[in-house]
Length: 219
Image (cartoon, rainbow, N blue to C red; front, side, top):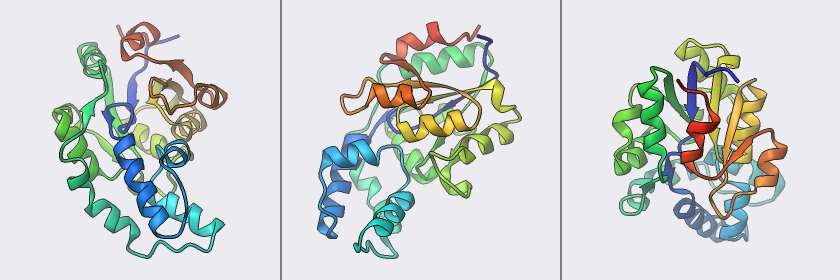
């Protein structure tokens, strides 16, 4: 396996631990709007997805209407939600530093808006490492599991898809990376992740960020 020229990091669940906080609130909001659901369901089906795609899916499949301002209300509540409880994923900073030290380009590409990444990466102290290159699904026509976001990030950074690797934790994100023609490393330390589905989607599995330096040739 050749060394990558660009490492693309997902944000939520890969750099920062936000999925539990976010999906607890999402379950409350959706249930309150008439879509009876649970934290566990949201954690499994909506992790790694944009709120716009979640709303579109629910409204296409049911009579529930979340409102034209649903996404805006969601984003407006994020600073409060993440004010006290966001931590960096264990050992991810060390891997980022290894990538930087090897002179390999890297960026973050997330379903989240850049404003949310500023909050969560800011809370964990990782923001200075990524301010140079932050990509959001709001910048492309289709979010994950479509490849648009990763292809856009690679093109903007100046690299061919085959020279890129993706670090993901969701099935949708893994599918997006594979569809983009990139190698995907799928992190499954979270108890709600599904290693079988990640592997089926084409991901190379790992459950400790310290493993990545051995899996990815970066020097």
